[in-house]
Image (cartoon, rainbow, N blue to C red; front, side, top):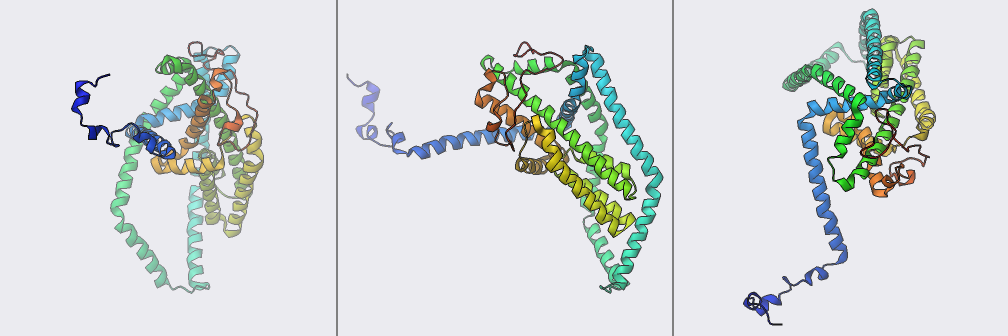
Length: 408
């Protein structure tokens, strides 16, 4: 076969140049070719993730209320499902669920405000006495510090605060700006909660239809498995938070530590941030005991906090998580740390639920269990702490039991 005019125009040296020869690919080691293929794909995934994170941070005033609504929906979903299973209309069930939740929250706020109004002045007076006693210890104790030394330490501290005045002012302005959006965010979260409870099935079917037709079944089942995992996680966290709040609050009450109800409520809310929240709120209880009751009661309060944490972490939580897809403690720590670095308190709050959801959804697609409608094998969940028998099968959304993209 004669070469074409274009082939004849190319010089023989160029045709023999190994840089343009198809055999160049074969000269690259196979391991390097595989590493290169993985590398550019990982770079593309990282770039897409970076753009997604940037968009979330850019529209955080919309994203955070939506995530709050999704998390609250997962928390109250068992109540809503129970009402729907007993024949209650979805809008009536939604109203009962939301009003009941608001009533409980309002009652807790009233209890906290009531006890703070009654005991706050005594706490402040006792704290001043404790600070005075500590100053006396510094001057008359083994350190033998003079009042001049103490005044110098206080002056140095004030100077440091003055040097950082601009930072503090900027922080106050930022907090004020954030508080200005709290009302709008709360209303948006409430509206999203109503929509998710009453019309979640329609919203999910619309979301699934955004994907190619061949991928819809996999996306649908992955989302349902992830949603069930999120419900299990929420039920576990609310049980853990209740145990921590009751145990630490009762311990504060029995030890005579003031503000026992606010301490319990603070511990309850803080426990929704895994590991870190319980430690921080427990430290607040110990600090109040130290300022009001003295060293020994503070030590006893610390012992109560540690005992409650140990019982909850090593005995009760494994029992509560018996049918849930667990998240490994390493994943919890890394997720909370990374989330707090990216988005502060909201990042720490939503990090673990997002990781748990993505873990189960990704394994559902990768393992092919979406074809049968079953949950993925617990052994294939890399963040699982122990293999457990999952009860996830047919999902229920908005009171329906059929599976499939167009039948949910």
